[in-house]
Image (tube, rainbow, N blue to C red; front, side, top):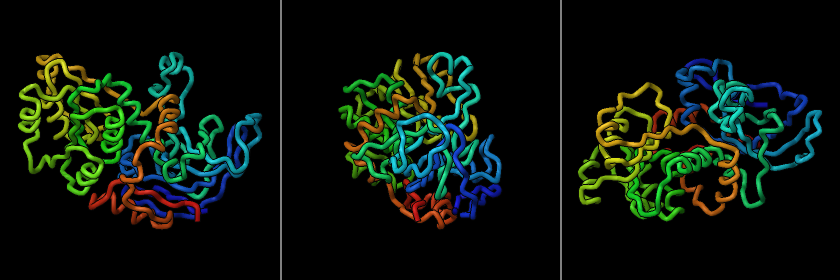
Length: 338
């Protein structure tokens, strides 16, 4: 088979690889679609603290079960259409014992710590297999994981329908967050970025979009809210400039929801946090319930609007080059089925 393999920093190649036999408690999945994520870029650029070459990457994927390992789980069969819940947890730490294993003290992931789904085939623990309903095709199935990230962030936020909400960052996570907030009935919704291409996608979704290189988003927010500022800010860009903006845009006793994982620890104005009595809420990945909700609501969302490139797995180098250059790209899906 062919697998997208992280070779060394800045190098990923579609290499021949042996198809693994599923062991006890595993299944073999023939991958149909796989998404390229920002964290995959961190791996390939050598910035991820755990991933070591050679590693088959990919944690956003969908496919079909083609072989069952020796186990007694009967909820799957050959031909089952599936996606994957990629979290690998210890089961014994404080978080795992208290029903929030998504923040396990030794959390690992498929595609980071064991072979991922950016390949023609991948073995997956049976308990991490998530069947796809008939209403979800393989493309949307590969977007369930990032959608669950956004569902989890919003579930942590306590956002209210009359809130003024600002999203900092119009990448896939920012745009998916915007879709979900629209679905909740949020009318005063704004998003900013420095990428005009992505901002146009936001506008196509009906979201008020601002280029922070061209507009003073603090003055804009002040004017739109008559001096009150935003009730809530979702930070989804993970750069110092948005860390600076988030404490300025939010009103006293407002909320900041930090969704992105900063590659480098940012400087945050803690005086503003104190003086405004801000709620700063961290979020990490998702829970099983978030996945269930993602499967339930995905058919009602225009998820395909964030897909800008569809490439074969054999062109994975080109896919990563496009994302690294950040030129007219949002979400890239790889076709792994041929």
